[in-house]
Picture 1 (cartoon, one colour):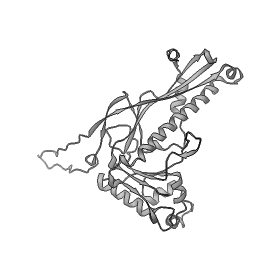
Picture 2: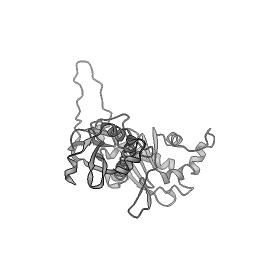
Picture 3: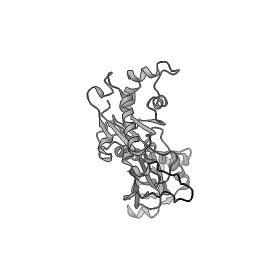
Picture 4: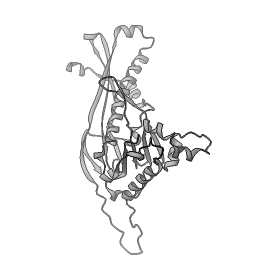
Length: 304
């Protein structure tokens, strides 16, 4: 009911719950760091190789400094609002030992559902071959598929790393692995051979990062239920290599991608709906996911 929206009051305590809530299974922000923006529409830079080159910076005495052009191509972006709300019936309120805890529980539930949608949006952008240059996508088949003991995942990933470096001058530092791929890789003969003399003897994400020579390996474990109730992986049987600058919150720092979020979101508000004799908890986020440097990433599909 549109009239009810006018009675919403932003709740600072529940908003802090929504902002601070994180599910350990969500890894999309490792590829698409969240950057706060002022407006829901605007322009963002799309970076090419020029942003990653090492230029001749040396200046001889009494000579001019070398001048370069660093103008990125800008493209328009548009953020969308993702919102959910849930009622707390008066009878629930009467039975609750602590009303605030009940409200916080509903806030976390709503926040998690919206955050799952963001994870899916990030995964869809990262796993879409159309977002990459043609030579930055490899579809595995035959004996190259990692379920084949004769396959060589270390070589496949090494070649992909070299391709990214050949374009931007930097190696990718993040490797995303789908959960189904991770289960195969940690028992793969080539991986086992690398770790058989190690203390742990188990291919954890940290050990895989050492083997594949990347700063961080993240495993996409999140799942979602489709319309029929069937559980599916958010991150499929794919791998994504990406260069993402550490601790970056600036769209003008070249990166594989960003999640742009409107400042002050997510936001939680409450209002009264007498028609259902309930207090309504409303959580809203406003964001958009963009792959901003296609040559800074590499997609490997059909890994298992």
